[in-house]
Amino acid sequence: MALKLVFLGRLADAAGGEEREVAAVPSIAALIAGLEPDLSAALGGPRVKIAVNGNIVADRAMFTLRDGDEVAFLPPVSGG
Amino acid sequence: MKDVRLLTEPFNPGAFVGPFSNAHPGLGGICSFVGEVRPGDGVEALELRHYEPLTLPGMDALADAALDRFDLMGLLIVHRTGVLLPREPIVLVSAAARHRRDAIQAVDFAMDHLKSDSWFWKREKRADGWHWIEPREQDHADLARWQEKITQV
Image 1 (cartoon, chains in turn purple, cyan):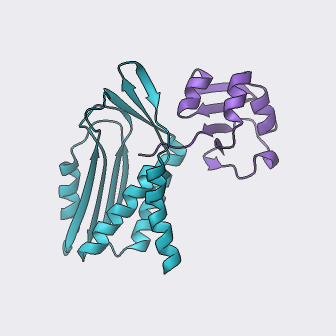
Image 2 (cartoon, chains in turn orange, brown):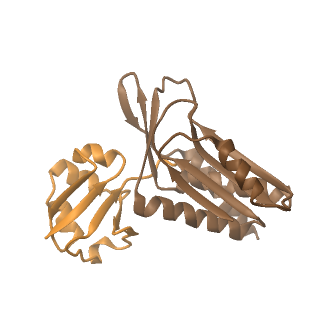
Image 3 (spheres, chains in turn green, orange):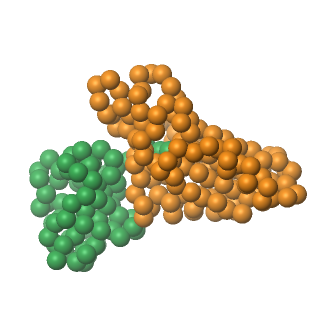
């Protein structure tokens, strides 16, 4: 029972790596709250978008995570 | 013809533009833009990170939008990821059309969207280490040009 987390851009520095696995939890709020405080703060900002299995989450409060989901945290893009 | 690619190794833009041109007999013109890592400013290297499930599909959707909006015969978008050195090409956009204005505008449109609205994260290496690059206001202003045109129509 696990979720794969992916951290893009500067969030990879905050997380100490580009990917990690964590135990599955049902909500995005619980997922973020279960991480280190500094990382939680960085991920919870309004400018960080979240994608689950490659789809941008429109309403993170209503979203239910499932075992095996890939959750990506996307800070503002710096463009190509 | 739509051709959208992400590359992890250095590339020669001419090696893409030649075959792209040959693939469109009857074209009136091709417009190509090549973006390179700017030398100077103390930048030793540039790293472009992307997210596989979003970046290439996003570029593909951008190509579709350009093909929809302009009268093109073909569109080619090639973008690098990974670590690049100064003067290496980052991006190539080529548009083939019967008439020049559609080709030129399609490249301008695609570049403005790639610069501000595509799933890339950039950092640059300077003497004191790596620094993430924040979004630029100018890039968003460039993007807004195309939104204004929609409302004017």
